[in-house]
Structures are given as C-alpha cells and as structure tokens.
Amino acid sequence: MKNTLKIILILTVTVFSFDVAQAQSTDFENKDEISLPSLQVVIDSVLNRNAMLKFRKQHIGVKESTLASERIYWTRNFGVQADTKYGNLNNFSTNADAQGNTSVLTTSSQFNYSVGLYAKIPIFDFLNRKHQVGLARLELDEAKSMAQFQEDEIRQTVIKMYQDLILKQKILKIKSKTLGDGKVNMQMVEKEFRNGIVPVAEYVRITSIASTVEVDYEFAKSEFTTAKKLLEDMAGFTFYK
Figure 1 (spheres, rainbow, N blue to C red):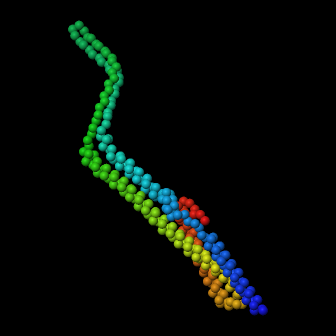
Figure 2: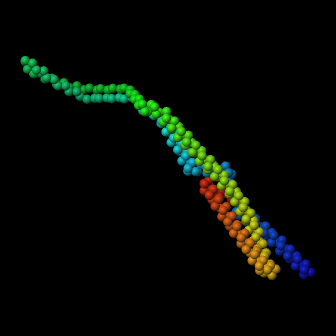
Figure 3: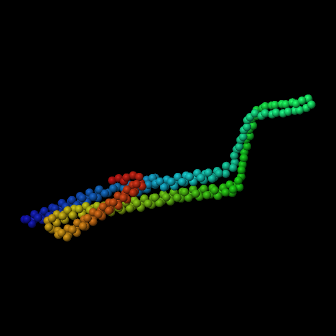
C-alpha cells in the first residue's frame, strides 16, 4: 500500500512539473516575441528618412539647374541697350566787325534718347558651348546614377538586416524555450538532490549546464535587441509587440 501511494505521488509531481514547464516555456517565448512590420514598409520608411539619399536627390536638382543654365548661356551675348540724356545746353558766341563786338548767349533744354540691339560672338563661347552642355548633361546623369546606387545599397542593407532580425528572433525563441525547460528541470533536480536521489557530482554538472543555457539565452536576447534597435532607428518607428 505504501509503495502504491509513493508511485502515485511521484506520478503526480511529474505531471505537475511537466505542466509548469510548459507554462514557463510559453511565458518565455511570448515575452520575447514581436510582430515585425512587412519588409516593404521598413524599406520605404528607411528610404524616406535616409539623409544621404536625400542629399543625392537634391544634388540631382542642382545639376538639372546647371544644365538648364548652360543651355541658355549663349543668350548673354545678345541684348537690348537704351540710353537717355536730359539737360540744359548753353551756347555763347561772339562776332567782331568794324562797328563793334556782338555777343550772343542762348540757353536751351534738350532730351536725347537712343535704343539699340547688340550682339557679341566670342569665339571661345561659340566653340565651347557644345562641350559645356555635354558636360552638364553628364554631371546630371552621374548624379542620378549615384542616387540610384545609394537607394539600391540602402535597400539591400535593409533586406539583410531584416532577415538577420528574423533569424535572431527564431534563435531567441529556441533559447527561451530551452531556458524555460531548464529552469523547471533544475527545480526537479534540486528537489531530488535534497532527497538524496541525485549525487553531488551529477548535481554540479546539471547546474553548470543550466548556467550555460541561461548565458546562451542572454547572448541571444542581447543580439536580437541590438538588431531590432538598429533597424528601428533606421526606419524611424518602433516595432510593435
């Protein structure tokens, strides 16, 4: 009868411990698991916030203005010129003859104006215009290519970081489950050790394994948190639980 009661008690403790292990493992997994936004949402947000990409696109605007300026640069050699003058004109004349001297002073107001067109044809500007426009067009194409290269590079970086974050989350989930199971198993071993069932050497070995499992979990958690924070910083928003 005593043996039967002992067996029933052992089975009850085992079942209870198994239920506790399942509950703790689930708690550890849910605590560290987050729902990630879609990859495209993250990429769009990063591209929209990236300062270097904004600089590249602004540089395109600068080169477009330079090209437009080079295309009309020749007009500086043509123009309209106007000139106006207004003032009083004093005229003094003296006439001497046998009868005497005659002096005449006349004063008149005058308003003069002139309007005309002018054209200059510098030889250097004429010969170099095609090269200047071509150079400006090449600089614009170069700016567009640099902006596209920057965008592709950012997109590839985000894809790598996003996939790396998913991998680290999966690893953390595995480590979390292992840690939850290990904690419950450690509780059972401690009970058995106190009851004299588990020898000291075995208890020390199992304790060392449990410590290693906990250290592995903390490393996995740190790596996951770092990867998550870096991607959140680039995207400009916090990933939700």
